[in-house]
Length: 138
Image (tube, rainbow, N blue to C red; front, side, top):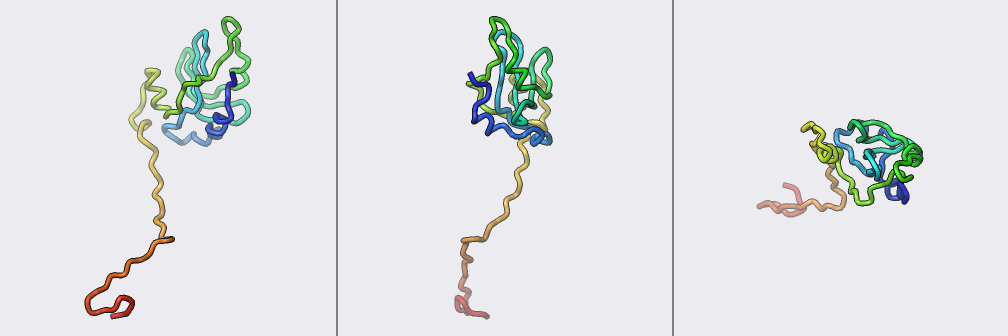
């Protein structure tokens, strides 16, 4: 099984691009099929370093190595696998599913940027007032 698909590589944002987001998306989950260990990736440098939530003996945010995940061999010689059934979700949802505390401001959606109103392609309506012609002046 491929640990990363082309879609995963496309979806994962560059490392450090989400560091100011309170609730980044988790795009990929890796796990040890024969023991403890789950890794939830939120960003990737495109070569070897991920950032995300690591659930080993402790649950914490940090960096982890793609190379180490690929080289690891557990019981029966099985390696780390990608959870093919994992659907991307906000980090707060993953934390809740692991029984971790989630701050209320962490769950709040990112503020949306106000879109500029475009007038391109919109016609201005002219209202006929009593005593004036439609295109004339008063």
